Length: 277
Image 1 (cartoon, one colour):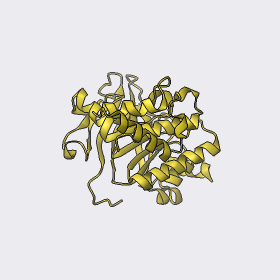
Image 2 (cartoon, rainbow, N blue to C red; image 1 turned 90 degrees about the vertical axis):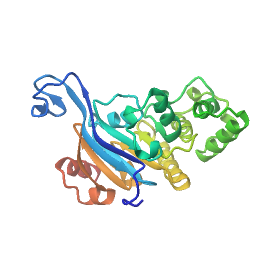
Image 3 (cartoon, helix red, strand yellow; image 1 turned 135 degrees about the vertical axis):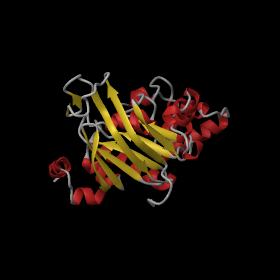
């Protein structure tokens, strides 16, 4: 990771507001809600870059805006304002949120991969695991059945799912196995950027450790850039090169992960780090 390289993703001034808003909003925000009109500023003027091959961690309590940022990037939410560009889409010259629905589908299927906290959002639970992969590959324009089967096998081997289970539906898998299917689906078309939203939450500790090891392996093997959301600093410490700390829809601190964990500057980060010790 070299900060003089072109970022894989660059986000500028992302704002997601629920409610009309009013002239007093920005002076009257308590937590992330306007005391005058009740509008909620789920993401408030967020800017960040993700560089080639790096893992950028986003940490903060529930409601801090982490998931809003992730799901805005994957077009699940429509931002109120802001701009995001991807190096691998139109040479980083076009705001992805201004792209047509067809272009946005192309970005979702070819340039980015998303792994949700809840596997039911990222998988078709009644399709076979292999069909989930095939769906993603077909969406990117391929129709070759043999290639799809070969790619599914390759991905399942990479995420350590027995190939003998390819024809089973994810609903019969354990939570950790469902996350592995989601990760393999997200990787199906070799995206430049992987979005991971609380992927270990709710899993047993031994399963969490396996999923985290898998993410490390994928980063090393595929050289992929990762935006990793977690409320768990132990996960961030293990995986993230740099970390952004969020609170009430805003970024309150950012820097190298070691630096933030060893010498936190913001009171909220200090509180987070002390709760880990």
